[in-house]
Length: 459
Ligand code: OOG
Ligand code: NI
Image (cartoon, rainbow, N blue to C red):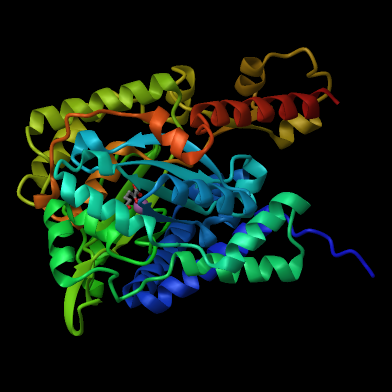
């Protein structure tokens, strides 16, 4: 008997991401339309902006661009979250970052499951923004207990998925056939189910508490609620969306448009009203809106200093606006953002000199041809053109943006006020492990690239 080699977790993730996209395209036809729009826009940018194309080629991102996307799900219990962590680990995805959405009136806290090493990200940058409902924030004790009992009675994983997770853990991996079956089984957890698991009256009660509560509690599993492609020009896509029958939210979340993109800019289109059936009324259809579309443009990962500046400028613009950005104040919001962000250096050199972003360093042709560079400092090498710096792409999410995305899809009525605050410890206890600090990952990638670059030049 020959022993089948294990498939690398990165390739399992790549397969899974593709399978998820196929499923979502079938479930949500608008997703297909959006993908097409993004592909066309990206193609135009690559042919019209050689500097952008050059940068993506040097960083290798051009190869992952077409398959790059993130999804989002919401779960209801600690054990669901902990098992998800194990499921994602089979695909080489770790929980990175902690996001508290309660200050924005959304009763969840979240992490992003993703690959952590730059080489793994290159094979598949697939990420899943994963939120845990904070039932403890529901004040109505009766409703809370009802929600807890409904959640306790469901199982969001297939038996085969659980078996394969365990096998991957004990054997150390999955062979080709097992990996294929794992992808098929894991996909089931994220599928949309149009029949609710509660009665119409119970659904109404959950929904009246918070639409998010109904979305998590009233269904069989944590349906994927969006799948987001990466665009190279979000303003163009935003503008083009209505032409294709898609209505975007009023403002783009994140930093304003810049020459040198930073962090993450996102926009979404409204959730679909989908027909659902209740257990006591299988014939009468109710309606639920959960699934929506989103696009994003990614820019440089910021250092703690850069991030502090970003947060300060964003808060200043929002404070001055005096309200959540919406349709009525969108023009003023954009103007305020541009005005405040004028303080954020808008060039690679400016950001590098002030230590605002993380970079990847490359030996240039000139550097590789030169001799005796062993003793030079990185500073000197950059100045002489022996080394070039490219910003590291931001692989994570932004809590204020995420809250804006949640809200635009839940309706403004969903803005609640919660006294209780951030509770990373409770989240990690539910998760069964700690979350990884994303800043440490960027710092490591930057360090590796400097080391590699200097070693190459010293040869
Ligand atoms: C997640 C919303 C946040 C993002 O990209 O920031 C998000 C959700 O609605 O479950 O997707
Ligand atoms: Ni998203």
